[in-house]
Image (cartoon, rainbow over all chains, first blue to last red; front, side, top):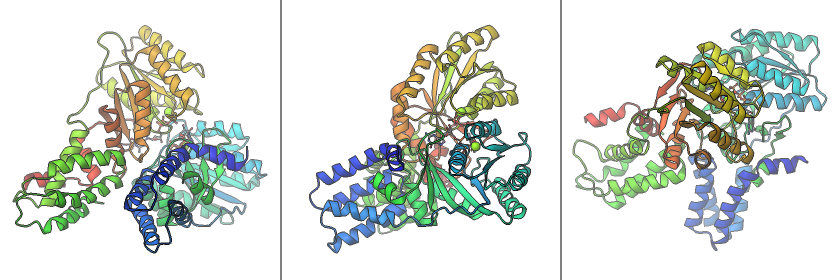
Length: 298
Length: 306
Ligand SMILES: Nc1nc2c(ncn2[C@@H]2O[C@H](COP(=O)(O)OP(=O)(O)OP(=O)(O)O)[C@@H](O)[C@H]2O)c(=O)[nH]1
Ligand SMILES: Nc1nc2c(ncn2[C@@H]2O[C@H](COP(=O)(O)OP(=O)(O)OP(=O)(O)O)[C@@H](O)[C@H]2O)c(=O)[nH]1
Ligand SMILES: [Mg+2]
Ligand SMILES: [Mg+2]
């Protein structure tokens, strides 16, 4: 199955709800009036785009309607798509091995699973990969990563539960250097962005990577659950402050949630989405493409 | 939007009301737009917001503008009262089987906090004199069984496992095990699943049929957005849920999902998860949740005193 088909399949639920609504909306409304606009606003809200960004989008649509650049409901849909696409930053992920990926996020969003998928993906593209079990807190977190190591045939560096995550990363970096790994992917314990001490611990992990492997490219990846509502903005803001987030993995898009909060994050924090998770299997990770994403939800 | 911001906006709207005796429909309508935005920003589902706004408007129109309060605060008080009422006015307790073993099933989306909550519940029950057994019925997630075993070990609670066999058989066998070992409560940890996954949703129905649980609790991440209603509705339709548990409330989410899932299922929220540690499970207090959704903190008590 090609990339586009898989993406479409992953987003199909998303797509059905959203498109049906909009299409129904457009079918039964001949000209663009205030009511059409308000219903469209509702569609965006129900996709978790958020009040602020929705209002900004609607304002600009209203301008277009006023200046008669939008006459039909088709124009309206096209304009909205363009508007949203324009919000996503253009930066692509560009790997320059040796590279360290520090994977962070709140509890249960899919960090460990995404790391397993990424390791598999990078390995298939010819990179030598090492995984670091930097979550030493959650029950059986290292065992979970081990299973992904077996599935992808990638080595996992791990310590005992309760040990210092910084020393796990330290060891993984040494192993990465001596085994000439291209990419070291570091798992971290899930943590809420509001926990000061845990965020400080994360900063420390970032510094360990900088200090122990100054020649490596260091990228922080934030994993975001597409089911998340407006709290994701606060998450992204604070994780960005702590470890300079380069890109996002948007998971669980195989459900009915639409992940509209990624649009708000792109708009307010200028963080690109690099990957999407569309299932629990090892192949259920896709490159993110803003055009396809917007086409798939609108 | 914090409470101050919302009251400020409402007060601005109502400023011109000075000297008026009652709130008119037009006064209220303008105020309701602000309330609506505040609720949406807290992730309350937009359909739930609509219903709520209608109810609140009806109550607010014709209200006396009390002299001790600014009208803005008064409207917030009405909003708050409605939220509390919608969320259930008192703390809900667990149901126990009248004779024999009580079975509690935990269900929900991936990563919502089921396994952790199974441990937390086991701890609470054990402290109240019960003899709980944790059953590992998640055969899919890597190291899920091991995770529950580690949790059980930390709490000194028995964990029933049967490897990767059919979860229905595991559940059934755990009841037999409990009989033999004098356990009076079983907490079944099921695998996370999407509400639209036919096969796995059917698996839950079959577990339910096999062990006849007294409680089927949906574990919901309190950071969930607008989709919470779809998830809760579908789980409820399939399983006839008996209650809800909200997790990860120790962060700064406004937690509008609480209102959404309560509104669509009618099920009481029985506990809230307040941290990753196994002692971080608390009863649910509707008033606190209402204040939180409105971003109010203690301010409500001030209003009441005013
Ligand atoms: N449906 C679906 N489930 C996913 C996806 N990604 C992860 N999951 C599931 O979500 C759950 C949590 O995933 P983990 O990888 O353990 O999440 P985590 O962020 O590492 O969790 P903590 O380490 O506990 O903070 C697991 O049941 C995964 O199988 C996805 O794209 N789609
Ligand atoms: N901060 C916080 N974290 C929690 C809470 N409850 C659970 N967690 C964390 O959320 C993550 C997921 O918890 P699990 O118990 O593994 O979730 P699950 O629903 O069993 O996940 P799956 O089995 O993969 O579907 C873990 O990192 C837990 O430590 C809570 O109340 N607060
Ligand atoms: Mg993890
Ligand atoms: Mg679990």
